[in-house]
Image 1: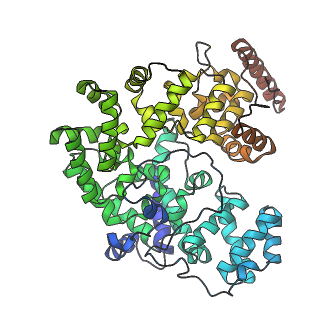
Image 2 (image 1 turned 90 degrees about the horizontal axis):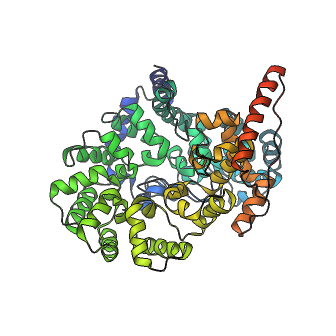
Length: 553
């Protein structure tokens, strides 16, 4: 009921504020008539144009979750220059200091002198003058800060939106806030039932939380008026609000695509594949919602031909592993050739595909790089036999990770040399954890190691890696004695702290100096018991629990 109320409230707000539209449905209908598939164009949003036929079928962790203002987004929604719609301003104004605006950003929003200077110049250029920026920005920053962003993050957000569509920064209240509220209402429709049922919540529970860890939400906030409303109105006819909310949490820039294309993709999945639950189907491969029907059908036909399947077998395969439809035909054929050398027996290869169809979406470069990394790391002598056994046992992790990348090497150091887990375990059962960003992984380790070291172990007393992805779960939060908001703040701020920068820089250089190591199982149990006693005593006396010392190697 709460989620429904939030959604209804946001819909009413959108009706009232979205450029005088009398109803959200009317806005959607008008936009649908104008926004045909080629209207979005190759430059509709930087994500859409850069992905092409590959179109980012999954959102994966990155090496850094920093909110950098230097990332460039492409051209406008109709392929026009990003200068379209900008207010008049003096040429070269970004080169001129803006002392009053800089002082306001420093004193009121907490930016450093260097960051304040940079953003003051950019914002004055977007607004046309320093005074116009000073008049318009306080309300915008207040909105962003009230939704959990820091002053720096708000400035970086506006910088990115300006690169996409400057008018959305100048008219933030009219063009961005209604879209933000509307998307948040769909996310709430997904989150609130989970919260009320006591179920495990996703990593992000609001648009602001997504924004703080990923730039993928920015294109949605930089779209032309009516586009996002039209997309949501059109897709709402085929999917529930909760389902759309789950899509937005994982892939907010999906709303940058054409509403017509998205609805056509859903209809194709139902009519051609026989998907009885299209919501579940597309949740497993959100990027497919941006694919043209012709591309989906081509990929399905090529998959059937490459694997020598019947039409029904191909249909069942992609219903089970939707990600396969994101693979180009030439990629599938090359991966199949490589895998047939490893598994000459057709029956065994079919079994591997049944459990790890994502292998077919990997480039040969990725497959061979992972194979070489495993041979070297695990000291395999009979490489092909041992490699085949590994891939047969762990097909999805082998396909999902780029083990040869520098980023993966840093994460492996955290899990093995810092957290103490055996390399063979990390590369097999634990390889699913490699999708977690390095900074998030490191911050989770520092939290758990200090506040609940016994959670570094499983019930049998063996070091494990559950904390990598589960540190935000209620049981971990309770064990650490912190709230979800405190965990989020730590993960966001620790990598930028003096300690975080020093340890991460050393890690990337191959040094483990200064990283705290796990205590023994016995020590962890003793520390856990002592912490419980201290918490109980502190609760009775109203005293905050002291932080324990970290053990270093």
